[in-house]
Length: 262
Ligand SMILES: Nc1ncnc2c1ncn2[C@@H]1O[C@H](COP(=O)(O)OP(=O)(O)OP(=O)(O)O)[C@@H](O)[C@H]1O
Figure 1 (cartoon, rainbow, N blue to C red):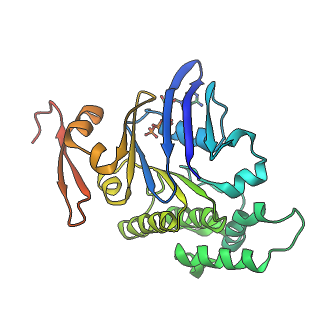
Figure 2: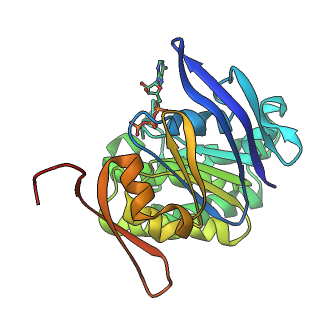
């Protein structure tokens, strides 16, 4: 199911944070959402998950507006991983991951075989099975972030929306997470991920949506959007773009435009 964003306009505190955003995101692909601080990336992701009400415009999954979906169905279709890895109760890790399955069964039903299988698979995929019996409050920030990803993966959503999921992870787990997002897309689901790191974006994304001042400045294949000219213009930096053996762009920021530093 395509995720279609039509003429989305969001006002926050009387400021226009998203201004006429249009894009059709395709399943089976990883779409990276990039842009400078304050460009509106997190706001766009929240609007895509129907976590905020836009002033104008719609977000649709297939032919249906996400805001009009029954909340349980929406929770099955859209998995949202927020920027902050906060958990308010010291639940057992396995129970946190199990929360990802709540929308898959009726309110008082016991977890099914399929629920347990999805929970185990998510724990395995995120390498969190070793601490499945620990309280989540006892984990490090990066461990907790992986558990929260496991919770979303356990829900097997049609679309996974992740907001800067790499922030608290070490390099090995960052690469693991990028592989996990690719694996989700490889089975035909949709993935939209907010990223800051241009190297990671070049490595993982099929498509890139570049935002600036609440507007889409470019949306297309990674090779079309991740160019030195485009990145220089939007981020105000000089970027060296080469290509790896898969012809994926490798973007290395080398300095501020106008900076006298080398
Ligand atoms: N609740 C709010 N009330 C008022 N303004 C807000 C609110 N949330 C976000 N904003 C403003 O909206 C703009 C876009 O915020 P958003 O968090 O979407 O940006 P972002 O592109 O994700 O930024 P970053 O890269 O810094 O995370 C910012 O200028 C921010 O200050």
